[in-house]
Length: 232
Image (cartoon, rainbow, N blue to C red):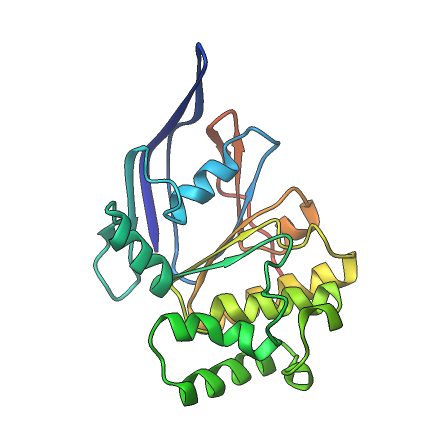
């Protein structure tokens, strides 16, 4: 799970003091899929960057853990943060961010390579994860031979293949039509629940938010709503 308390972030732009986050606090359960919502400038991206250990210049406390382990503070040293990101975090982006010269299988296997898995393990685990997202017949296709929805499924497989504790998805359906977007969200939710991976999904799309377990609404750096739930 994730617990965060009194998280503040400010920027100094010229003579202006910009407060992106104003002491936000809350918790996210292990395996939960949470929609992070709010207008531009609400603090969504800032909070995502903090949870993803991409921004460590903030005040407050962020703790990571699971139902079977003790919570630990988010690492602050750059090398420790990089190691934690590589082993415990996954990322899904709006524009997929796949390596164009790699096949779907090679893209998904890459995080396993970075985490020291053997070639045999990389092949087996990447193939299994691609089959889990419905792309078993597209293992050797490169991104430019895949539809947008298929590319995002590859990105989901890549984010989950090393079974991270947390996946951060930044507008994962913004580039997709409604049918592909619905399929992508259902795959993320299903696999997240099965693996026990927590998902934080930043989105402007209410249809995407409705398919998550819960919504956290941000406005002007404050949490406005944290308890609305939908039945899927």
